Image (cartoon, rainbow, N blue to C red; front, side, top):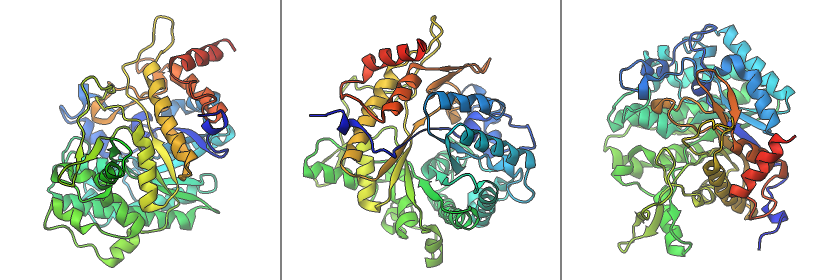
Length: 477
């Protein structure tokens, strides 16, 4: 039976919220910022829903102080943000842009003054357009370009920023951006060229780790953020747990293409190139030398896991893992992603079993069709239910002793959702894109109270009862 004490997270558990530069900053042509591949991609007819762009987004560039105050009022202790590479280096390399550097100085200082720990992500998909025109990730020089960029940030902010993330979700910016063409830069490469880009990106990760270790003042924690593409055992029998483990880390089927986890994790964490996985994609994968692997395999302090959904897996009669079809009416998000909260527990468990590193959940959240109601508030009980179910699975991992050190809700604000434009709302704070008015949703107050308790005070305190309690507490004081 659960008690109040065993529903708590450990005392130093980090509660945060996350965003990305292109999705919230706006000010695309303000203060000397150079264009990124996403600026160019958004100009392609039909590339983004409704022709939406990140030109204005949430106007965080001008409203960051308001957003910091929102976080402070919601008890958020840590903020994961990304730096716009082309805002600080308009051409990707060369002369820095002082106005861009000053913006992040103000943001970081404001966070620290509010008692919020900054967690900086070097790369969240907005590759400088000028460097893309020189070959982007297909150019071996991208390794050094990224190292130069990381050195600049380490030198400038390393006296205050002690927590860093290198690359965010390589399967997305490499696979969706370079194979399917559905994300920037919109390429449709064959798998050999895709793997060349992946090789260079992981080498760039390693170079950035070296750069940060050299330039950041004093101790720092450096992490890497692969997407959490796992399988969930349909039940906890030994054979189905093994089936889910094989689905997560085994040799992929061709239809899983660029999503398989080992391609992005084994080189970085274990110093191993998964040749048998590469052969599924192409018989002519790029040569990876011992020196290349050594660069990818720089010591890091933690993994960041981004989790939204995962399939249920069982062991088939032929001894291979197979996906279990969901029943009709299974709950789905507005993105049409199935709700599978158990996956958060299994993601932590499987990743620690294989890689042994401490972890933070760097993204987890729900796309809802929510809006400002007639009463002027935003009621999002589905998001609260989603978070409650997922965080209880995370608490299970914590209670069982897995190295889970923090949780960052995606996202702080409704924002530009890449090729989907503005039709999805992931934020705990509603944004009116015409007026830029921010309205905390019921989920924001629920999250505030959860942080104050450092977990669930009673196992039943979740769902609709919690939101009524949290809303009233937030609005009568």
